[in-house]
Image 1 (cartoon, one colour):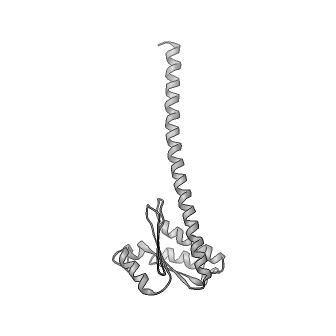
Image 2: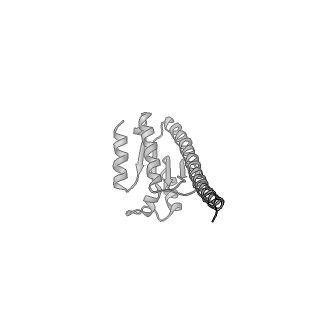
Image 3: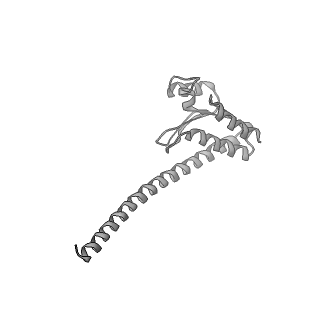
Length: 162
């Protein structure tokens, strides 16, 4: 093996390392873009809900999957939960974890899916909104419906901080 072969082999190995690093950075960039898009949409949705709070009517935020799949099931599926929200006559925002970010609004009921990945995205989203409502002085206009005891404690701390 000549010195030129060793140099060439070293360069080829370095190019392979660079290609691997480029693929890793592309994946990381795509993940960060998706997170950015999700956060922007969440911010837009939070602003919309904050404007709703200024109208004076209280807002109930429902922890969607918890009410359907939790230990104390309150609905058999999404359609049943949405029907309950509509029948309540209240302004209700149902938040679900979901890979694809979606928003639907009909009458006084808003249904949103968090998008993104990871556990407890809906919980985090709801807590962030409740914190924002408390900062704006609207904590008395927000309530959260969930059967998750730890999540309820976190929300109640924020609502009582107002």
